[in-house]
Image (cartoon, rainbow, N blue to C red; front, side):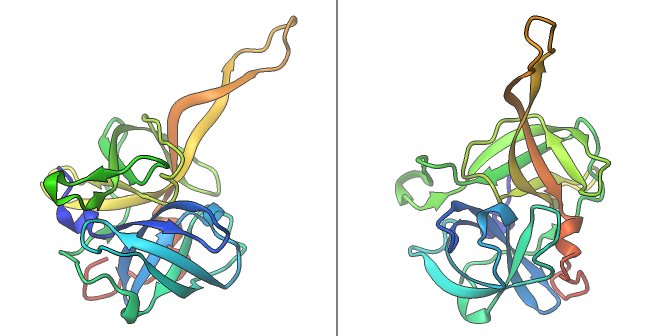
Length: 226
């Protein structure tokens, strides 16, 4: 079961570039930041972003947000400073931004807002992000660290959180990464007759490791326990 402290941080968003996707809010030493996938953004230092909190807010919020860290960073992650005036009113608990403790074969969850699909809470009708359950299938050893997750993600999940529960600590859910998208790979080996590998969805999602978000300059040393 995904606890409220995760749900309350996941937002549906639209960037100035006109791209729709998902983001999530994290605490840090200077306040709060909105994290999403860099490929949704326009690449400028300041960007107008519209976002809507899951469940707690009835209307979207729009603000010009300042991007944190280098604009040329290679990982597909972006973080924006979130002024206190734009903080959602509904927050429960604290959530760590860390992949420490993730292991192969572990159950995990991806939260996002796929295009054209809306999930609501019973008769209340308030919008919630959709949840995809998966398994940690592998990781990269490249300069950009990330996680391969055995599940399929629809367009719109980009920028959402990869969530896991630390082994031996029931209820200790952490955000281990940022959803980048569905992984596409050659699934048919080329032959002499057809030397071109066939590219098809592999049923694998790729998430950039949470450490790359912290590397943008978000400090873990704060009272909320990031």
